[in-house]
Length: 588
Figure 1: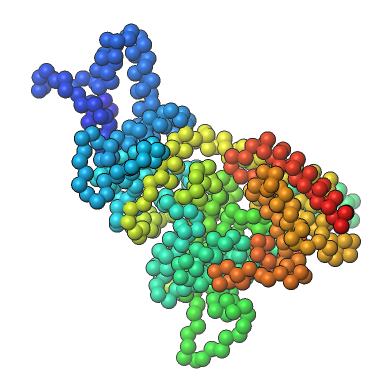
Figure 2: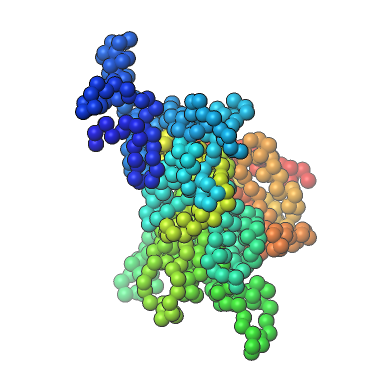
């Protein structure tokens, strides 16, 4: 493409907006028919008057290289292969900021909102981007006063789509960054799905995971949660070879190919029977098994009364990600019930993103199912993730992604008013800095950290007579059973929960954040502790994900950005905390 086309205004058809390519207006034109000289050549010629030509050429080549790389990002809408430096990103944002009307020279604003900023500290913090994103009818709409802010928002969404696809869900069709944390974003999605399902829909089937925001996002949308207790399941680990018996002796008959799978029972996973029962008769499940009297003339609510199933990928052990493909299969079976996935910090996990992709493969499957003769709308499948947990930016943003452009567009158009552009700016800068190589490197380091943390906790557990719980299907979080610290040889409870949770308090005081000591439902009942009520729902054994949990444990996670040094320091402090706790018990 000729460089002459980049002078003045460049039309970027991919992003659908006009982008100012230069702020310098070329006034050199001797004749009307004469070709316009290349702008960078003119710039090089002018600075050559002050410094040597060789220095001028190297300097302009450097500037041109940055522009070329950023132009490639705009052309493709994808992450750069290698990230930009902070100085380069700051230069790009400052240039884009000059496009907004509040930063124009000699501008005169006479409206009620002209992007004025009183404190220079605040202006510098936001690079002078004061207009926010979107318009009153659409959070992705272009603001005539703010082409720079609009470009950042749209290019950010485009790079996020590429990021999600490369992280394990290549079928994702569209995504949208909203300036709300994960809980409120889930409420936002629930309201749109509620509108799709009609006035009769009021229930949300929720496989239990003990995070308050999961329940509150349902109640905030004016809907009724139907909690489904998880079940203990057997996970899988590496297969171990057994010795063969003599040929024909029958000793190896039960083990085909002489392999054995070790079974685990610590994991809490999706209760598929409970979810299906809730789809068939939500009110009966909601009333915890109470038999409802049905009159001949009354129609009991069925699948049509379900707004969606709200599942989870990333979670605290021993809870493991929900069985998304199997749940989607049930959604299709009972009239394409929408499926909303809370993927809060799951983008950093190949397993979590793979489950999302498999769920969509199940949703679009054309295999014949029950009631296949009846026409039904396509299944709405959305997944929501946090920006702070996955991209290490300040709290305040979440990404809504899905497999239908029309559904994402409908959600964008339902956002009332304009929105803050700060989350978009943070993510925009971070994605430019990371690039594809940077993101892949972060994920690889996280996986190494997970292995190191698991091995360290296992070694520590053996030293203190504890047990690392077997949760191989949770790719981020680990759980260390504390049962031997509060029971005697007869398994009688000897330690009050308040004393046990001091382990977590001690670690927090020593600078170890993110550690949770969880009291099981059995201990809660034994000591007469009242169950917590959240959003009008009573949760027995809250934090343990189950009303029948029996072991206290401590959580630790290997999340994005964690370093080996942090893990070593945590393990050292945990060792000291456990030693001090046991010494305290011996004194008592």
